[in-house]
Amino acid sequence: MWMKKLHHSTRISAIVSRAFNSLDLTSSVSISTLHDSAIFSSPLSSLSLSRLRRRSAPTLLLSNLTSILSRENAIFFVKDESPFSSLSESSAKLYCWNCATEADDATPFLFCQACRSVQQVNQSIDYFQIFGLGRKYSIEDGELEKKYKDWQKILHPDLVHSKTQREREYAAEQSARVIDAYRTLADPLSRAIYIMKLEGMPVDEEERITGPELLAEIMELREAVDEAEDAQTLNQIQAELQEKLRNWSKSFEDAYLRKNFEDGLASIRRMTYYKRANEEIVKKL
Image (cartoon, rainbow, N blue to C red):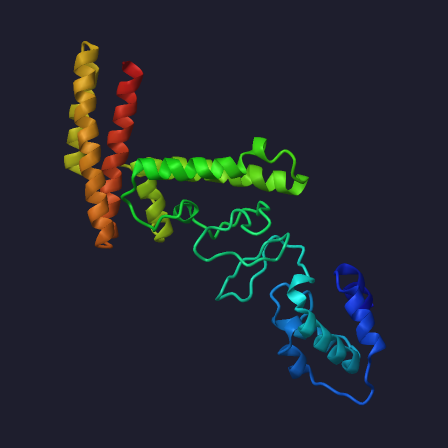
């Protein structure tokens, strides 16, 4: 049964037949020898050592088959049904589901450079990696926008209508994630919150403000907005808020560079409030 599954689930049926035909009854091989062979070292192999131990597979046939697979470079013939396969937990290598080409470590694996097949979303690739950026707070808007447009030229659903249903679904998922990544990184506050999440310091955006100094500032600002009689006054208050946002954004960057997450969280609290106050002013204008 195990040989029937191998024969029909992969593209190596011809190789299996050759193994049968050239079987040498005088040869022998151990399980440890098989484990070191190409069929087990291949990240896309559907066999495993544990399966061989559970099954009483003909040792001689497996020896012959392994030898042939090594010569034929089996990685190009045996494919996994999963979108990605990993060589090990530590290496976390990614392979194209369509052509088995290994992903370039220098670029996010959203689509295959070799066959240009769109890949399934991989949550281990963070938003910064999607745009080829290091995990840093300071980002140039023009650079981010350019890379966002480059991805949309590849992944937008309207541009993959001729591809398979599988790839169209992958493209829709990837496109949506790229959009979310762009919106997150383009906004200073959401970018700061995302960075803290990656650092294992999730931010409670509904946290109540308890500091007396900030509470007093909030009360004063609310009164100023409520008492504003014209758009000019509101625009002036808005300009002051935006300046505060820039200052506290810089404070967050400094805290993050020092890995002072407590000061980073304090900066985020300030930025959160100023952004909400600015949104209220926009509604009144």
